[in-house]
Length: 339
Image (cartoon, rainbow, N blue to C red; front, side, top):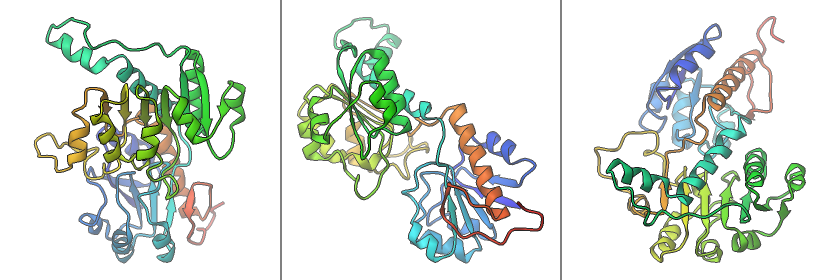
């Protein structure tokens, strides 16, 4: 069987081809799946998508008409897929429920330290042979408070690093993580966490309940010199409200690896185009803001685990097996000899 993969990065392509070798043929495209590209999938029973592909009602209908029966998503998040429509169309959807949490947690810390110690500004200066230190003063993390919003595997990994820095740990989640409690984390209300934390990091999924979890009121409740890092999903932060607060001179540093309107921008080269998104254009002008293009997961370890899980998801689907990665089950009858 030949599988069509959308939104494949150059570094990712050889890894996908190698992983699928001996299983199935795979055709890799760098374009993302959307309303304009969905017709390309006609004739493919199985397609493979990335987190910035848009699988809304129109796209899923087009896929179903073209014969697609299974979507294998190469990410943990699946807020880009209308699962109710997929279920109505009897289309199987699977994702990668787990990959290296250290990839994201370590990158969250990379952003935090980069904005705290003004690394981008310092690097730009030294390239121009300007070695002055004015405006480069940061703060020790030791003894300060880290607020971890979402204490699952990634939040726990972030907390372990914060513990190594000697920070006080506050957590907010629907349930306490025993490993975080062992680190000395205190679980508090979201309001207390925002008010007391020097560094706030977001590690919760994007759902209707978490859309704009960090809204105008939440931002106003934070310390004027707080740092905010988001490596989860852009929709967790009301970016327009964030820009308003930044205009007032608030916050020591903001590190964003995700953006709520990143689809159609991130993973693409827009350097020769005018950016119509005024909010993003304004956001990147602030000297205390660092924006990266959804790369927190992008390590050899994590990408390798994502691809391996994707191959298993396709194999399981074709063999009639079900795993915890399946979001919408609609499995074909097992082939002869399958187990």
